[in-house]
Length: 86
Image (cartoon, rainbow, N blue to C red; front, side):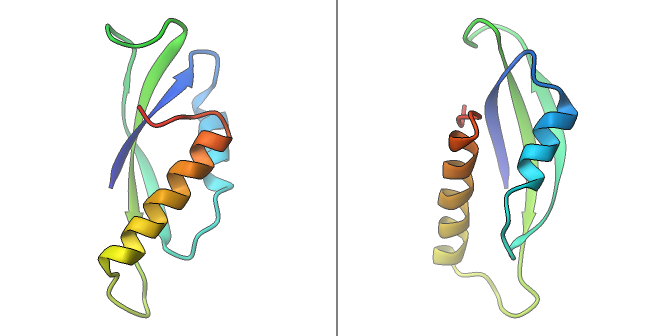
């Protein structure tokens, strides 16, 4: 799953990675940086940072409801720590 977030230009990659790592979910198996965009179409002082998130369970095949619940919870968390979805 790829998500792009609006991030203040002053936020370092390490800080963003730390904030993402603070999100706790048994389904989140890992994440990696895909791209950073700083061009047209973004609010002033912001960059778009895209991450790829790997989710899964060793106990069961994830249902659409499991995936949607994770997505909603994760996006809400990111918004709460000031990284809205782009």
